[in-house]
Image (tube, rainbow, N blue to C red; front, top):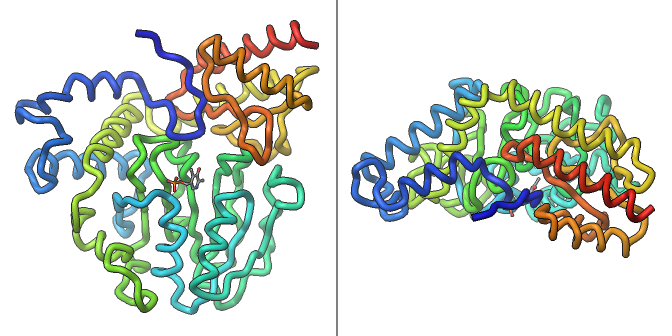
Length: 360
Ligand SMILES: *Cc1c(COP(=O)(O)O)cnc(C)c1O
């Protein structure tokens, strides 16, 4: 067996320890005589799995008691509709558009009410985070929406926007559990887990209880009401059981690593290795304004499309996979999530240095 260093933006690298544990339990989960995949979601064994997963996540993120943790389906993209359907009581919301995902959420919300784009970085291909200290927040806005880490463009909000008292809603798909977070600053934090936590198919939503009501937009399907899932402890219908099980294992892995403080330190060290290399390189250059750089997604270019393609191809041969950038940015992107070891980033930087020598 040989495993590569996988720099995919998502689905993405998972901790090897977690995959091995899951393999060990594949045929017989702890004496039940069956795989978690074969198990009733109403069984005692699965109740243990989902309850422990929630408890571990609460511990990792210090989630206050007045927030619910929901394990949902439909991907992060389904939240683009679910959020306005549930939260847009006045039918007004403000969006900060810092990339494709924020833009898609902004466009979807327009189906449900008056949606204001109160800031954007589209003028420079989303390569920075706009100043959000004094935005024209709408007095009747139900919430202010951000995508906190922009997976495609490699930018991250280092300070949260001043929402002037309005509820903050954040898509954290690609920075979930990468560093400590103050949950009380948000009304709703959500993300698809396939970037930094687990397998595709699970969305985690952490939502303040007062936002979970029956007062949703007319016609909202039962399955798209937060209250449906909150009332049923995420077991209204069959949840993505195996995915939740793997997420639970990743939470335990994170606790063993030292929690989110330790992950932040480790992620900063990994990102610094790559950004420091980029900053001194004569061939490669980062595409993001320095102060807005993501710890998770690092886009870079050579400035020559043919050379970029050659780099991606040769990197693959060297066991460094999925480095091709998003089509709207071009070049390369290295996603260096929690489960990417320091050695993986070191291998990438060594390869880049070698490639630079041979191609400059
Ligand atoms: C990947 C991604 C999405 C889309 O996730 P799906 O689960 O495929 O719908 C949304 N937001 C961000 C920030 C992402 O990185």
